[in-house]
Image (tube, rainbow, N blue to C red):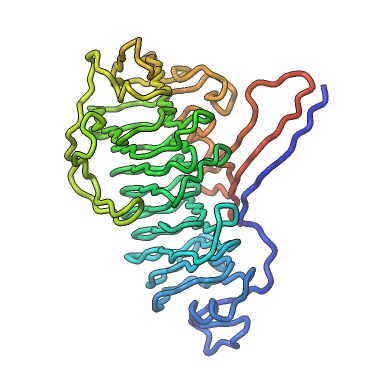
Length: 419
């Protein structure tokens, strides 16, 4: 049987560049074209498509504003580049900026608004293998690809792929309008988030999968009945909480499946008291200003009683399946328009997750519950036999799990390669 395989998308940090511009502070002087003693002058001389190649050293620069499509990288892979400067991205439609292997110490990445842009022609910002205090890409029309970074503080963004990072808290904010695209998704996968993960975006479905999480706050989601927002195969640790506080919920289409809850666990909702304070942050308008605080909710704590959850007056489905270790037994009124699938999985981890084909492990066996299971298994991000020196991985793969005679097979993939 003949099959046609079509590769739709592949995100890589390999491109064709116009000019390599080298930065080395040990030079007696630069030439103003290809050799420079500081990063700021190299960026100023560069044009779209250039590479800025930096020798290992410490660079004390003023605020570094980047408004070009560039690739900024170490001259020798694995060496340490220390930059004492806040990096501000002044994006534009079609921008492609890649920053790799930079240690910003106490400094941060930030962005400025795009004057004219669109959802279909974003500024694509890729940050890989960096150390920084904060990454704040909280503006319209950016695509944030944040991969394998150590973020001491918080990450803030509106659209993109957040893969294999460690951070304190992560905030996904909304974009203007109701750009409900049922094909695109926001991916938050294989991260360690020790504080809060706040989801406040109704433009795209989101997959939150194979992370280590503590507090999850759901404030807004794409409510189309054509899609599912998946929160799957995560490990919830350290007295974890899930708080669902969407006032005036339009529709439920959320899947909680194959997660492990380790230690004490609380599930809260303030839907029963709209408008009441549930402030883990300070919200200005729809998108701006996050201020961490104490979670002080008026909502109900759900345990193994027969509670109505989350709001039975709203249509849709809220699937709670094959969660284990310390799961909450969620029940609801059978006559409610809210369809709740309640399955508490077995205590075993191996093959103890969701048995549906779209949750299968990457070896095509039944889902293993927790971070090791599912199509986004944490095993996918450290290649063998040398996991500490891996240069490539695929972090998003859409492929049919059921095939039929005569069917063309469409595969959509996004990957990463570090030269």
